[in-house]
Length: 71
Image (cartoon, rainbow, N blue to C red; front, side, top):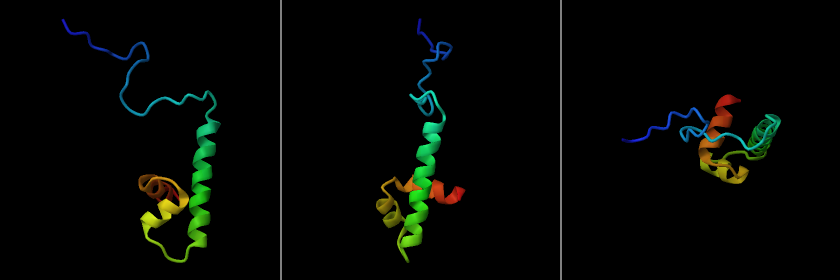
């Protein structure tokens, strides 16, 4: 018989991993920091490719895209 993990004990490995921090403000601060870095970099750069912006900010291209889409 094959055992099936239903995740009832909190060990479900699907999806995004749970944060190790108890306070939600830690993730919020990281998001705000990244968004502000993107904004200040956009303001400083006159013209740049999207990948150049992501590289300059120091975050993945997908993260940069998500931040700009939200803003």
